[in-house]
Amino acid sequence: MKSFFPFLLLISIFCTSCYQDIEECLDPLAKNYELSADVACKACCLYPDLSIGISHLYGSENYSINKMYVDAVGDTFTIADQAFFFSEIKFNDAESQLINNLTFKQFTIGGETKTFPTDYCLLRSTPVECIAGSAKFAGGLSSLQFLVGLRDDLTRLDSISVATDKNLSRREVLYTSNGYRSAYFSIKTNDGMVKTVFVADDIPISLITNNPPINKPGATIQYKIKLDYAVLFQGIAFKTEGIDAIASKITANFKNAISNL
Image (cartoon, rainbow, N blue to C red; front, side, top):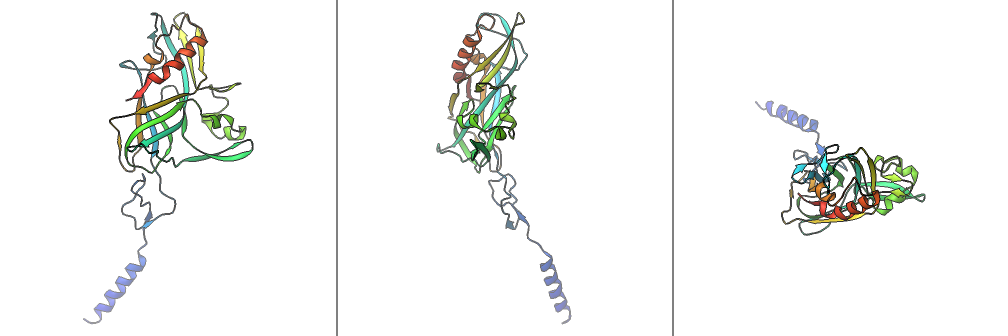
């Protein structure tokens, strides 16, 4: 009987020496948080996306390109193509404090390397999401600010930097010989005419909600908005008005067209 206990002790020591600690992310705010891990890993935690969820509407209906709509004077039109930038995107918590963006990218301006947050996106057609970085955060969102357009420093990048970011490609429709534009619409009127309209000015958007969305730990941090094209195109006669007049009205309408969902 006595000889049995040393045997058990040896088995116990052997099993203990065979066990390896599980090394994973132990931050509950990370999307790859692993509760069962023993040891916190080094720089392996992945944090949730900062996202603007976008609903594209035309009044009470869903909006889509190539669908026929009626303008201010009763003429029909379709939007054959469109694109716009969102940039300088800032999410604020329930106490109106800025949520720190954790995703950065290096660019060069005038030969000098600089680091910028990836707080911008190019929106072609009617995307449902604009991902603008990542954050270590859970809780309520009180407000959102952004520009319709591309913030100034991103318009001055060296060509080598532009080549590494497809959103900023100089072959993109929003880039012209005069620089980047904020938005673009290709409009086809009922007589078959196609009008190409660019919005040149940056348009600041600020949204505050009394019903803040609550974000769970590790989940996408999303603020939902709607873009109502009936408001965006309000008061425009696409068939008879010139391109400059149309661009001016779209620019003036943009702030009212974007609101909380």
